[in-house]
Length: 461
Image (tube, rainbow, N blue to C red; front, side, top):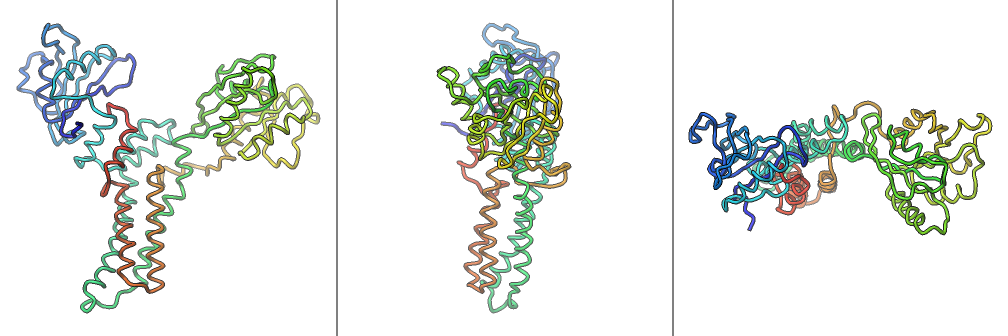
């Protein structure tokens, strides 16, 4: 049975070799167990002070062999990350060293391996952080751009929680007035429904501001999926290499070179993009090429944006029309490639009924690539400037769904006030809204909610 009263341990640094590796231990017997394998230089183990770092050795208890020279720090509860007694062992960053030390700890029956996100889960349950900060911490760790880092940092510092608290206090204020009118009907003055409506209007405004920026926030956090498609040998791989600014795809004059999907990450104006170079869409009897074409179609179906590459030196063909029909439901930019091969007035034209953006480029000479990048930013609909440095937003789908539910309940309560229905029914909507908004910061929660949130963390966090 897994218990949150257990003492837990895990490697807190990423897989791989490095200068430093850290093992984290949290729980009632973290100090006692860790001191079985740690011997300090020049000081007795029983004289350790909290939040002081000590130099010493990790020693294999039976053979007395030294495993590594380490730094050791004990943080006494409640003044630690988890709110429990915590020990950190800072070793040299060898995976073998870290695993060996972790195994020595786990040999003790009073300690177990931490689950994913369990250190942060304990921090939440012990009142060290709320759920908005816990989720912000995960966003900070997984930040892909500077802007997404700033967004996560702002949330970690409590900006979102401040907005949620305003919503919660306003709902509480409105609910207390409604309940007072019910419980003390004879003693209270007649309730001002207009005043309550004004309070709920403010709640609506606060929620709408958080929801309005959800889409852009999701883009900065999770990135945009771009798929490059077109006929074989039109320069898709050359464009991929141009955008990635490195040799990612093989470029030859032989059609059908790309059979698998080549993926890479790029950043444009602080926005993360995941770009995929796919097999050229065409009919073929080659079974291997057909596998690549089917895979390309799968990627296109999941894409946020498709870059349709056309050979600008040739007239648009039936095959191009067929590809357009395959992708017409998506956001599309046509990249007219190979403009270096023709004069300006000879470049292939885009049919007017396609009604899509186009850009003239030469992937070979990197001509027009900056214009293409600007069109990519424009078509995904990100507003100018840094919209998240001064504004709060719903940072994930969990928050978005909760806020939408609360908004429905607030609108129901307002309609009840306008329709002059029984105050008891209005109070029910407001109580449900208050409980629901509490789920964001963790005033109310279920084990399932916590499991979903913290299972996304790594084991050492």
